[in-house]
Image 1 (cartoon, rainbow, N blue to C red):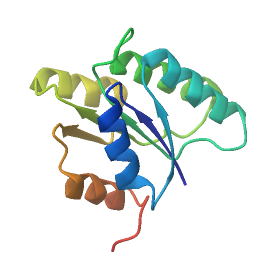
Image 2 (image 1 turned 135 degrees about the vertical axis):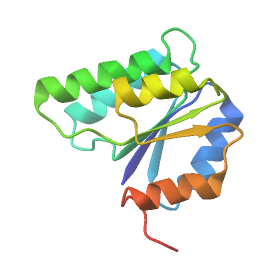
Image 3 (image 1 turned 60 degrees about the vertical axis):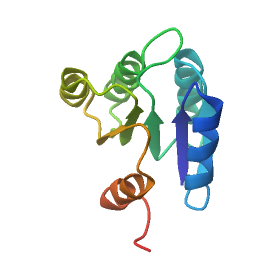
Image 4 (image 1 turned 30 degrees about the vertical axis):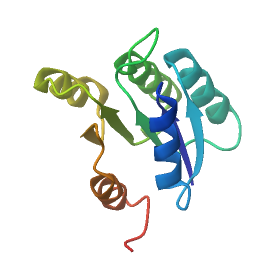
Length: 131
């Protein structure tokens, strides 16, 4: 199983990696362009991602823009949607609703992250086993 962590804060990316590394091979991207490029390389190769953890506030394009680009590629290729868990400090309910409505995200997790909730969301999605 592979997870793409899209996080511009190096410490947050490291903590996510440490939380997930026993369940997933993790790859990190620090900005929107790097995230989409990494996603496409995995999609075009033989190891697509099983889940994306996506920060909304990124340098350059926003996380929602990256999500829209990913969903467009999936639709154009007739592929199933990869589960996306948004990880963000943004607590504006309108942004959360827009993310659910437009991006079809699987979860909206507000920072500082509750790692038990993160793991519970991954269990609910069937991506990790109940421990």
